[in-house]
Amino acid sequence: MTARVPLRPSGAESVEAGETVAGFGSLWIPVIGQPHGWLLRVDTSSARVTARIAMGTFPGSVAVAGGSVWVANSGSTQTGASGANTLSRIDPALNRVVQTLPIEIGGRIVAGFGGVFVPGAQVGGGPLRRIDAATGRVVATFPFSGVPAVACGSLWVARTPDPEATPPATVLQRLDAASGKLVQELAVADGSSPPTDADGQCVIVAGANHPDEESAGRILVLGARGVERRSPVLHTFIAPLLGAIWTAFAPGVLQRLDVNGAPVGAPLLLGNRGQGSWTLVQAGEQTWLVTTADALRVTL
Image (cartoon, rainbow, N blue to C red; front, side):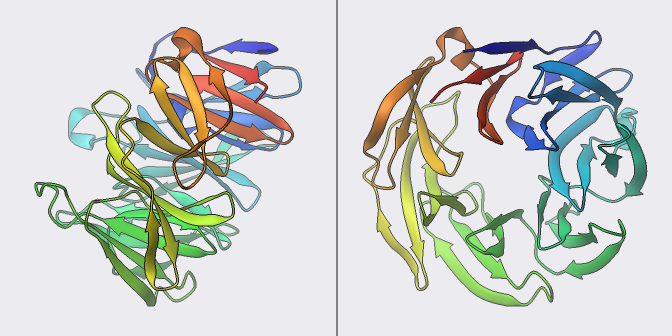
């Protein structure tokens, strides 16, 4: 580990490490805090925090699109959270918010196809909105609810109709990003995350999969007609990162897997930084490990 950047500014409640994105030569890391949260900008060349941009109380997912950085400010206005249900647009040349768009936010936002896609927060699942990344305007509303993803050359929405079922099944819907037309719908019996690209394949991570709980998941390879093959059950936390699949099979030990669940290369030893929320982010030719305490440049 060749560089370390301490995070957690004064007044911070938690660093949302898993929501970090890279863009414009920097890492962009949301931080929950009072009376407001922040978006931290870490310059990857100097390994320094170069900007602390005030956000709403609960900044969540971050996306890069149209020459801007977009931050979803969630939380409830009933609890007095500042900036709740707004989307902040940041100009990376100015390091400040240049547009605030009031919009219901029901989950993680994603960027792609010249837009930012924002899931709704209505009871039973709100519609998916498309924000034009150039104008910052809502240009389309699609009648689909769930967790959006841009992967495998398509826009996807993943939803769980009955979260109380054991295991909860997931419906994956592939949409035309311009028209919102439903192109393909798949039901995954053992539940799954939205699709992602890994090792040149379109894959989904299925089953119980949480870093703080007992996990039993599979890696599913998705084809034109649906799930083409499944890995054996993996009793570890599985995460799609850096265009590959990784598992934390022991505290502080991260191992890359192929799509069949077999280890690839040497493990990455994180030590006590492997506890709690963390993610790996590719920034140019550099790889960064971001935790709730710091950001570290690592060699894989």
